[in-house]
Amino acid sequence: MAAGLAERVIAGMAMFKHVSRPHLAELARHTGMTRLKRGDFACRRGQSSSCFYGVANGQVKLVLRSDSGEEKVLRVAEPGETFCEALVFRTRPNPIDAVALCETLLLTFPASAIHALLDRDANFARAMLACLSERMQDLVDGIEANALLSARQRIASYLLALAAAGRSSRVRLPVTKTLIASQLGVTKETLSRLLREFVNKGLIAIDKRDILLHDRALLAAVAGTTAAPSLSDTPASESSSV
Image (cartoon, rainbow, N blue to C red; front, side, top):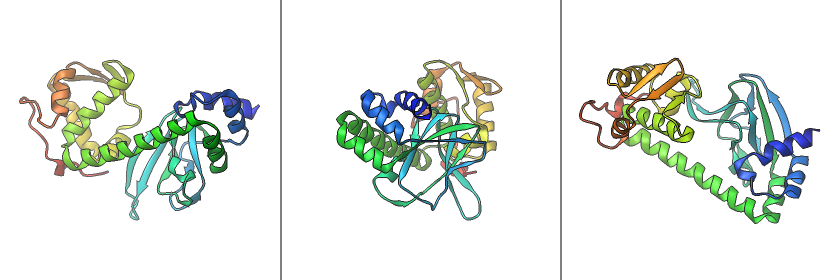
């Protein structure tokens, strides 16, 4: 029964959607399934690992932590997404902490099963390369945003990205403001202040975690390298990490 559930979940993940059913069934037989409670670790920084992970349901935050306890959220893995893919190609200490944000069903893909699938299925090999390329591009984009964009630009870009992903002008914040602020490299106070500014300027309306984008064109101008004339820009130095 567990293998059947794993196969159904794996089939719905983007990385595996072109893999043949026999190959999916074989992978599912070697895939582990773990239920996590909020606050449980999927994996810890410094641990040796030769697998990667997939979220069947729930959410997992991927974070870097300093010795003083400060954390930087890299991203939040949602259902159907995978993380730590590079670990199956090189045995090395895990560079991040992965922590469940709620009750989560986690899949574990061992390196041996992934290597066998790569040998058998060219479609999966291409999908794996595309995934790793996307991860690298996301990291570059994040570094560029933190180095070159103001807090205001980052927040505007984040809202537009949510709207683009959902294909709607009404978006729902997927996690808490604290996590979003950490991911964007701003303080929670800065995030709240700039969201209020967007409301006052008529760009958005806020109802708890739901945000309606009233003026996407102006919001896009704010997100660009040159802010709209009606909004003064915020220097990047203001955006300290949480």
